[in-house]
Every structure is written in C-alpha cells, then in structure tokens.
Amino acid sequence: MEDLQSPESPGSSQNKINIINLSVISGLAWVGIGALLIYFFHDETFSENLIKGWAFSAQLLIGTLAGLAFGGAGILMMKQPQLRAAVDQYAIMKQVKELSLSHSQIIVVSLIAGITEEVLFRAAIQPLLGIWVTSLLFIAIHGYVKFGSIPQAIFTLFTFLLSLMLGLLYMHFGVVSAMAAHAVYDYVVLYKISTEDRE
Image 1 (cartoon, helix red, strand yellow):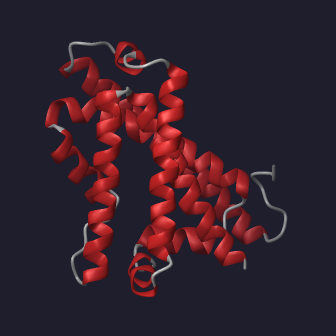
Image 2 (cartoon, helix red, strand yellow):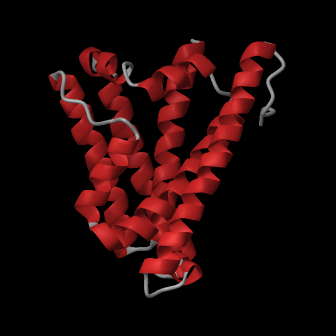
Image 3 (cartoon, rainbow, N blue to C red):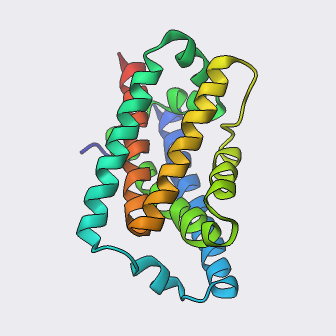
C-alpha cells in the first residue's frame, strides 16, 4: 500500500494531506452532529443505534455487494460520453481528478465518508425525516442536484437512487451495511477516476 504522503510532487502532496485532514475533520463533525441528534431526539442511545440489525459480518457482506453493484453501475454510466461530461462538471469530481489520490488515500477518504456520513444521515437523520427526505438532503448537501441538462438529471436520479439504497440497507439490515455500501461505492468510483487520470 502506498504512503499517504506521495513524494513525487510536494505541491500536490500538500493538497492530498489537506484532503485527508479535511475528511477527518468533516467526519468528526458529522459524527458529532449525528450523536447529538440521536441523544436528543431518539429513544435509543448512540451505541444501540449502531449495533442494532443483522450480525456485523452479514451487514458487511450485504453492504459490500450493494456498494460494488452501484459502483459498477456508476462506472458504466461514466463510460457514456454525455453522462461523463455532465459528471465531470461537479466540483467534487474536478477536485478528485486534480488531486490524483493514491490508492491508500482513496481507501482512507472512502472509509471516512462511508462511516461518518452514514452515522449522520442514516442513523441520526433518517429516523426523524424518513428515507425520501433524507435521501434528497444527502444528495443536495453533496451538490448532486442539477437539472440543467438530461445527463445532469440522469446523474441526479442515479445519486438519489444510491441514497435510497443506503437508506433501505439501514432500515432492513443495520447501519453497518449502509456504511460498507457507501465506502465501497466511493472507493470504486474514486479509484476509477484516479486511474483514468494517471492513464
């Protein structure tokens, strides 16, 4: 596995370190907000909310398979030139391409996002607002709601379906399955974008 600090170019190495630091800081914020929402508005404790559902190993397997399925669908979608052009317009995609993250950095960013965002959106917010509103809020906060063109509308619908899938995993299996699916999806897509950039 590569180092989190890539020695090749000092400027880009600093940016890569910054993105890891930003991921950690935002992740801590998501978990903090999620914990507060659970404490004040849920009947269950934070730990009860995280351990409920199917066995850990079963949740991990189901979430991994769901993440691979949606990750594969995302890659297929990006192979269509018009859809790819629309996807490349999103700020987060531009940032990923510019940073050209290493394999280990992609793993770290994917794990942090998968775990912490699911604590906030699925474990804390979804029981309060429901799956539909939470899914819309999730993609809106990520900046994925755009209807300027048909390809943008298709990508918006795709990310909404992805968010719904995460919500359904949480409801039927537990938050660990949603975390696993989210992390695996992020890893597959980020790895594909990063590999294309190097090629």
